[in-house]
Length: 567
Ligand code: ATP
Ligand code: MG
Image (cartoon, rainbow, N blue to C red; front, side, top):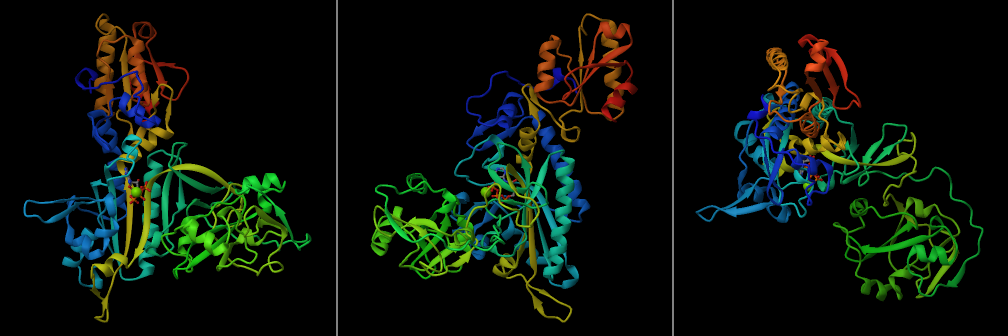
C-alpha cells in the first residue's frame, strides 16, 4: 500500500479525554474515532489490526473443532424472559420496541439465542458434542464506558458455546478451549496469565480468565511468585494457617478508647499492630437476622466469598447501622466478639489470633488480651477475606504477588443452567431424555487490540508484534522525488516485497525523514527500511526494528530485507 493513497490522520497532540495509553495512541495514530460514549469507528489502518486478531481467533477456533455461525444482534424479549435474565440483566441490556410494540434487546451475550437454535435441530446423543462460535457485535450499556475500545458499549466479541451429554465431556471440551485460547494469546505476542475466576452464582468451579498483564488493567490478580497459582483476587482462596494458634497469655482488660473507631486509630492509640486486632462487620443473614463477620485488623472482606456463605444473605448487604446499634448497644466502631449478640463467623486468619484487641460492645471502649475459647466461644470459621500480598500461595508453592490485568477472555463450564431453563432435551443411548451440559467461551476481540498496545508501546507510539501489525514493514525513501536512483531502488523493493507476500507500506508522501519516522513509529510498524542516496552509493539500505535503539546498514537487496523480516 502506498501511504499517499491511505487516508491516515495522525496527530502529535495527546487527546485530553483519553486516560490510558492505548486509547491515546489509537486516537493519535488514527486507528479509531469516537462516535459517542463507548461507540467507536475503526478506521482503515486500525481495522487491519482488528482483522488480523479476528483471523487468529478464527483459525484457532476452527482448529479446535468449533463451527462458525452468525446470530442476530437483535433478540426477541421472549427468549430472555424464558431464561429469567430479562429481569436479571438490568440496565446493562439495551431494550427497545419494534413498530408492533414488541420488546427486543440488543444482545449483550448469546446463551439464550444459541439454546433456541440448539433445540430446533438437536435431538439425539449422536449429534453431541457440538460447539459453535461467532465473531459478532455486542452491546452492553456499561455504567462507565472508558478507556476507548477497552470498555466500550458496542464491541466485537468472539463467543462460543458447546453442548455435551456428560460433565466429563464438558470438562474435556473446556480443556480443549483452554488450549485454543492459549494458542490465540501466544500468537498475539502478549504476556498473559490464565487465572481462576469467580464462577458467580452459576455454580461449578471451572471458570478461568485470560489476562493480559498491564498496569492499567482494571482487574487485580493474585499470582504465586514461584508456582503456577494465579487467580483473580475476587476468586483467590486463603487457606487457614497450618501453625496452631499461640496460647493465651495476656489477661482480659477493658480500656477506654474515646473516639477511636477505626482499626488504624485503635492500633495507634493502643500501640498494637493491625495484625493483633480483630474487627467485626455486621451483615444481613440468609435467615433475615444479622450475622457478624470477624476479620483480622489488616484484612479486607471478600464480598463474593461472604455472599456465598450459606448463613449470609446474597447479594451481600452491610447491616443498617441503626439496627446494629440497637442490637449491640454501641456504635459500629466498637463492636467485638465478646458477648456478641448475633451469630458470628470468623475468617480463618481472625480465628488464629491470640491476645487480640477488639471492640468492647460499649461506646469508647475496647478490650485487649482477648482470646477465642476463653473470653468468647471458639468461632465457626470460613474463608471470607481478600487475599493479601505476601500470603502463602493456596497451592503451597511460593507466596502471592499482585499484578494488574486486562481480561481478554473468559472460559466457563456452565453446566445445565441455561439448557434447563430453555428446556433443551436430547435422547441418550437408552432413549431417555437428558438435559445437555453447556460451556461458554468469550474473547473480547476489540479489547485485545487495545490490550496489546497497553503492553507494547514506547514514548513514540505503538509497537505491533509481527503477527498483527497493520503492515509488516514500512519503506521510507529519502528524496524520492529528486533522486532517480532512490526512486528505482524503492519501487523495485516495494514490488518485490509485495510479490513475496509481505504487507508493505511505502511512504511516498514526500515528507521529510523526521516526519516519516514519527508516523512510522506512532502506527507501530515493526520493521523500517530507509532508502537514501548515501546508503545506495555503498549498495546499502538502513534497517531498524521498531524496538531497537539504533538502525543498522544491510545490503540493498530484497533478499537481505526479507531475511531481516524473518520472512
Ligand atoms: P468485564 O469484567 O471486563 O466487564 P465480563 O466478565 O463482563 O468482562 P464476559 O461476559 O466474559 O466479560 O465477555 C467476554 C469478553 O468480552 C471479556 O473477556 C472481555 O474481553 C470482553 N468484554 C466484555 N465487556 C466488554 C466491554 N465493555 N468492552 C470491550 N470488551 C468487553
Ligand atoms: Mg462486564
